[in-house]
Image 1 (cartoon, helix red, strand yellow):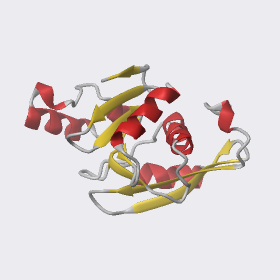
Image 2 (image 1 turned 60 degrees about the vertical axis):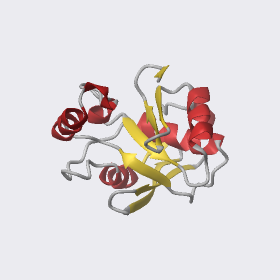
Image 3 (image 1 turned 180 degrees about the vertical axis):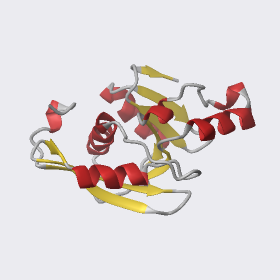
Length: 162
């Protein structure tokens, strides 16, 4: 069973992302006729990898579904790429980011990024304030608002916001 029944009527769930650090893009179907598509998931896992180390994590399909639902709530077409600032983060990358900025960086020691359950994103043409509001309205997990850094954090952990 898929995590968002409201989307179950869709024949395909497609997600297009662009890593802002590497400029690599992925556009993949990860659900077809209510079933997960292994090849599409593999493409997205690669696109959401830790770009610093190259490590790949099996991303939470609920997170991918949440990103599709977020895009639909914002009335953004499926071909519009979501700009990815951060997807999976290896424990080494997470520790280095935390150490570089101290405790007040917003980098949690047990980050959802390390579990494959979080992304930091922006969507071209959508204000961060509007993106944040849509993510909060969905209630799919954690939402962090980082206007100074130019992104919104979305995860499938417990519902919370900062």
